[in-house]
Amino acid sequence: MADQEALLDKIKQAVVAGEVEGIAELTKQALAQGIGARDILEQVLIPAMDIVGEEYERGDRYVPEMLISAETMKASMAVLKPLLVEAGKARSKGKVVIGTVEGDLHDIGKNLVAMMLEGAGFEVINLGVEVTAKEFVKAAKEHEPDIVGMSALLTTTMIHMPEVIEALKQAGLRDKVKVMIGGAPVTQEYADKIGADGYAPDAASATKLAKSLL
Ligand code: B1M
Image 1 (tube, rainbow, N blue to C red):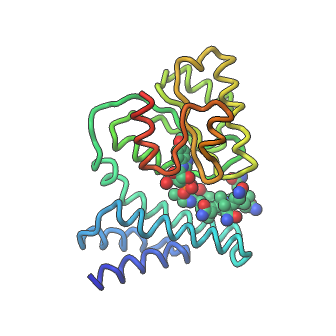
Image 2: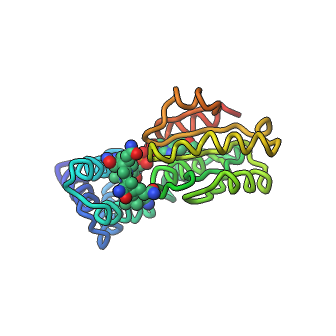
Image 3: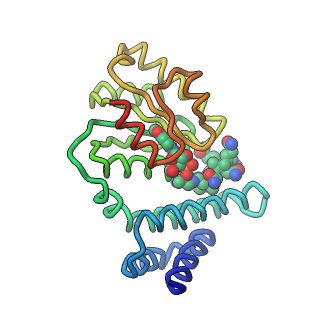
């Protein structure tokens, strides 16, 4: 038990310090010790990114250091992904087109949401980052999803969410898809204000929300 705690702490410190090399191995060790993929994610990786964010906010860390921590988290998540996806596997529940909005490079949370949705049996088309309203509409036409999901981590980029909703309206697609949004600065109040169909604060509730929207 103490060994497991020490290992989890090592993973957390590695993410905070941005030690990409060795993180996959540490993650595999944790899994081999019987620690669940979801526990590693929720008890270690996400709190590590919170520490990184707080340090950045205090001015104790610069953007490149924030990036290297993000890369470290991604390397750990790559090991966890098959397990997280497998954990909730069921047959296709519907199709989701998801992306981070225009001007926004943050993709860890969005990828996590995509991963959890896949695990819950959704087909997910991940458009990546800095997705413009035009690109969301193009993807909605091409893939005919049940849900369009948008993520934003910046107060300066969440303002693109209503633009996407408007563009879907203009393209005559708004009635054909549900829109769900999320990301740290986004709230239920904001979702209501811009006319989104739903908001989720984290990846687990995003999956619940997606199911309920259909
Ligand atoms: Co940036 N960054 N960053 N950053 N960064 C934040 C977001 C910030 C809060 C840090 C801080 O000041 N404390 C701050 C935003 C302030 C604000 O607007 N309120 C900030 C800033 C300012 C910036 C820059 C402007 C810095 C600069 O250049 N001066 C810059 C902007 C670049 C750009 O996007 N144009 C920038 C850059 C970066 C990096 C590129 C270095 C890197 C991102 C790398 C990457 O993602 N590939 C980065 C990082 C890593 C962070 C922090 C530290 C961590 C974000 C993260 O991955 N969290 C972040 C501080 C923080 O959040 N603690 C910060 C972990 C992730 C699992 O959580 O993304 O919230 P999250 O996702 C959650 C939920 O939000 C939700 O579920 C997810 C899983 O539970 N969710 C959804 C997310 N999307 C959803 C969609 C849904 C439903 C739920 O439905 C569709």
